[in-house]
Image 1 (cartoon, one colour):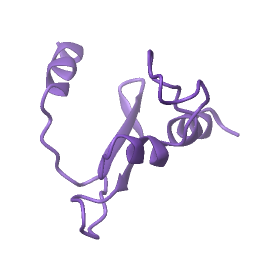
Image 2 (cartoon, rainbow, N blue to C red; image 1 turned 120 degrees about the horizontal axis):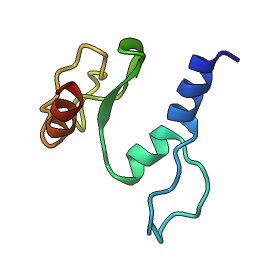
Image 3 (cartoon, one colour; image 1 turned 60 degrees about the horizontal axis):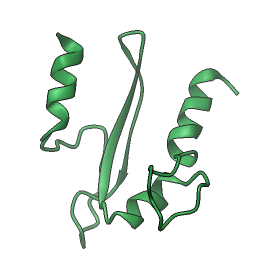
Image 4 (spheres, helix red, strand yellow; image 1 turned 90 degrees about the vertical axis):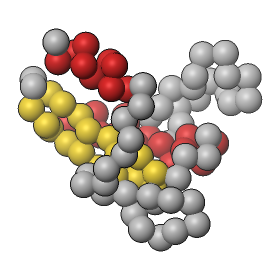
Length: 90
């Protein structure tokens, strides 16, 4: 397994429990299960390695009750994450 494949495996199947999360045992969790637990219909994830996009994938659907899947081209409102991204860019 390549390093990138290991990273993707960790993202999709190796999420650690959140601190102080009394409702979930301290075991690794699949991304789709975490999304279901927190009622997140869809997300897009990108992994950047050495300032280059190494991997990106969409998970779930754009809107609850709809069938349109999230892709790497789906546009989301950035919200609070934009602050962290702006700091990294600066």
